[in-house]
Length: 148
Image (cartoon, rainbow, N blue to C red; front, side, top):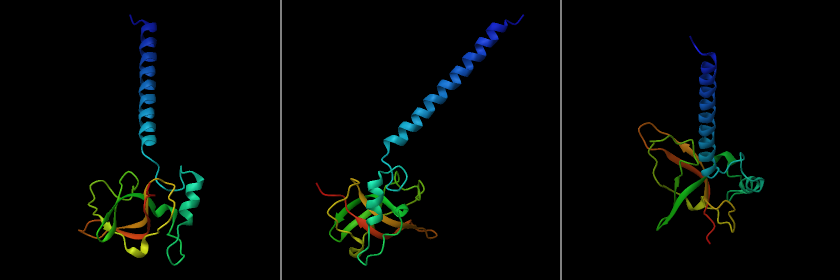
């Protein structure tokens, strides 16, 4: 004969285990999202940063496209000037495995500002894909990280 209490206990234990697993999974997902710094866009960023991004203007006075086009980037200074490389953590427009090379920043696209509150070098750019070629970047403007 089947013990109804034993069946009920097993069912309750199975439900509790599933709930605990769900809580652990949700915690892991939330902590991994919290560990990566937010992308420089209007979602989740301090409103002061949003105003800073909106204040970015080319040397002609035009906006550096939209806030959605600006991302934190890895950069280096070479003998020819600045080069940037997108950080995959900040740019979901570049798929894992897509080849992307360092891109030279044209001098006219560099905004030499005294402040950059983000703590990262910022580039506003478009991702350009061509058949059988590495991903390239169409750079609107670039703000180096504030030198300390």
